Image 1: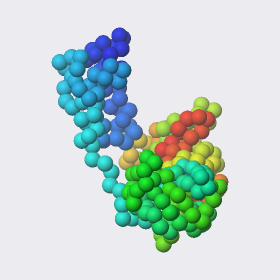
Image 2: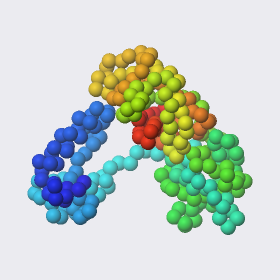
Image 3: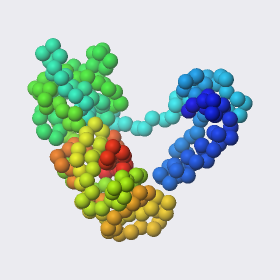
Image 4: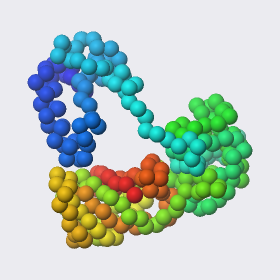
Length: 275
């Protein structure tokens, strides 16, 4: 972006310099060549966003929007068990309303659901998308639901609205694979007992690293170390993590959106991981 800046001026040499610096970083983070794409543009002037205008002759390929239109979206199970992480619950004209995004399944008026991790059963009486009432809503949609049999205080951010017959898992400890990307200067190593804030879907909980099982470098994934005492930045770590409160999560192979997370400490993201 910002190729129009006077310090850049759509010069190909500067674009090539950025690409050459980014490729090693992306590869060290685990990205393969078919998983990233470089495209020069200017968000301020709109050059190479929708149309290729005011761009030099060396700029080739698709525009930004054309490239986005060609991306195949990840598969979602619209027929799978319902999973809606809650963003908020509130009262509107005497009715209890819930806001969330459907990560899996389909929701319809009259559907029986359960709020996890508290296990409270309730009923969806109406489904709204952009203030318009719908007969149903599928995964990927941001929805507002009118609820019956539940109060707004039980629809807390981080809770998951689930299928009654197949509710979301509730865990307080799990095994995960982490990619340690950055550690604070005052704590340059990650060990057992390391505490941070875990962010998964819309939940944010205090957590602690319990045990380190295996580690390897992001640059040399063949050399593995069993039961390491600590790891530094640039490592891939398999470990167990405990959460301060029971939280609704899933495995990455089950529901990916509920099985991936980040760890944050001192206002920075220190690791990304999957369950």
